[in-house]
Length: 354
Image (tube, rainbow, N blue to C red; front, side, top):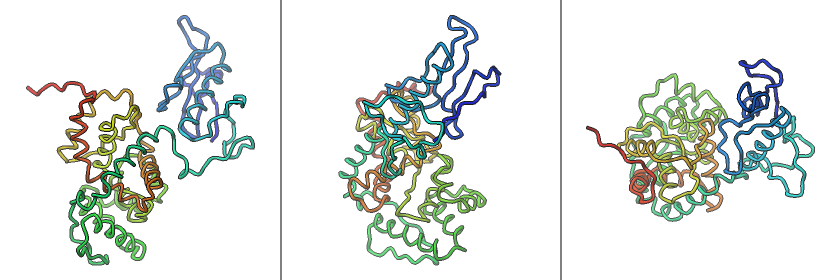
């Protein structure tokens, strides 16, 4: 995880003005102040980091060196807070961020594999979702009521007497089996799953084919754009590793945190939906005071979502992620209505239309 400083500020060509980059993302900047009482000093600030209250986002120092050191210290605190590097031991002297990747630094402690590392800011949501799933997961057979449309005849599947929840669970595995044994049917499978089962017929053929052509890592790193579509394609590839993320699931996660009165919720983006409850909830979220909340990085929405599901599944010894996902999907409208009527919500008054 390299930290590179280089002159990149076009409005001030001085080589003393530097921008810090983590990989290819500019996370910090130090600039010489041109006017005012601090003229000649250096202002530093961190960009778009969902920080803890103990992390400073900006400051002014007398020299560029001090500004860089301040930015380094706060950024290192943020990395430790989100779990990307180990938190420093109290007796250890503070060190500047290394100029080589942390993983290859001889002085660095080993970092747990991503699947075993949970950023602290996600812990409350994992706790809340685990408690909610323990309460409502056993009722999934009754809660999940979405019927299965006619399945393509090249997919080996019979619904039988199973509940819709169990049938959908088996259907995903049957579709995945067809995906891996009938590669010439990839588009047919993806299009059926998205348009027929998912109820989203608006995707163009070239869009579906572009998602099919991408690797799992490429899709997982796409962010929020099209996630309700390409997350289904990931499920087709491996339903035991991936889970669908759509408007209902995002709404359920956000509403759950409001209902449970999380002190620092992490809100996911409102995904497009034709559902009237979802539309009302989206408007509710727009006027609600969300100043104390984190926002899931658009580029990391899906990976954060998977991390939460996997942590809850690990804690509760749930074998598959889709049990948790289907519970969120089934309870989305119920949770949204509870959130919008919750007595402690901080929604601003909405003016009635004239």
